[in-house]
Image (cartoon, rainbow over all chains, first blue to last red):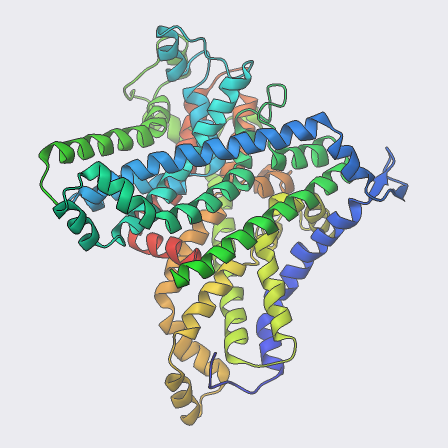
Length: 292
Length: 282
């Protein structure tokens, strides 16, 4: 809280005006529209709209496709989070041992953050291309017939790898920062007491790293749920047979391609509730971090 | 390091080298592919080392593009991406720093409400309100324009909070001294706050430039005229179009060009990048 303030009454509104205008026109108004449309149903020509209460939500609840999309999103988010955080933690622990070469390795590991999800999708899609890709060539040698165009498992594997790859650098940077804040004296004391590196890792580093881990869990779930649209669109487009049709992709597809406004709006509302819940979790955690 | 264990050090180095290799693999493959010709992929064996067609492929993409794909030359798309990224980064910083100034240094009615309105944008990513936002932009006639590409994305709760934190750490004595010397609020903002938040602005700019450059869904929806295609959104259209007639070398050259500017920013300004990344998550 500032003790010294300026007295003007009009000036703060002028300063806030651009931000508030954009917030109202492009955030609050569309969000309100989504909520409104989620209670309406349009006829095929978009002329008549009728108020249908919660029936758009009911339809989603009874739609096997939507329930499948929920399940796919959950599996996808968990796999991306675990794979990306696991790999990043391994690299961060290795870098934490280094003294001179830390910055070299960090530079070599952080740049994928800058690659767009859609471009990451294109890169991995090329590597896994069934006819000319590098990976199917090697997989064929060990007797696995890779085809993400027809196999659901292969398609999911592809989008998980592409999405996790892009997120490694982010997790890595935060894990390195977290590891550096673990007091060396604790590890030294444990070493004097005869605890080996593995024991020290699990009994000292892991518990003290838990705030970072929890924070990254939330961030990675948000990333996997909302920022991976580009990966999906550039590779599988939700297929085969809805196997990679995550919630954000379904909102887009039902709204723009399927032109089913009521259903798409209802899906938007559900997604907003998910984001709000995740944001609340994140902010509660931030408060805890201060007390930690 | 607690004790000297050469074995563990070796293991750590091996892990890191493997990690660097895995992380670099897709880009290496794309780079190699972008230096060959279309016929090199037909033989069934995948080239693993760069070929001699680097300059030829890249200059073709930058200058002429692929006529069959309906996308403009990559040079045009990169220009559009650059304009969009700069407008988003500068726009977000400009409106957020003035908002934070208003919220921290003034007391006015409904201040709390204004703060919450900005906060709520954090909970409404473009992906979840995509259809109605598109309708608003279409109604305003902003399709196929730089304004349409950037303005709907430049509200930023994160940036506002960041500047709020920065301003809260600036000592009150500076404000008092400025007022005694007769400086008004805007003079104080320009001559004291802006210079003091210079590194925060730079760090935030790095993050926001990457954010802007990498936008995908939004440009994909609102650009129907190829004059406004951005490279990240255009590359998908290109890949779709060449699916029947595989011109992988050209698609991969485009992918390399699409990631070059943001990757160069991250590597060239690594210190600012890390600072920005950590600060925006506070």
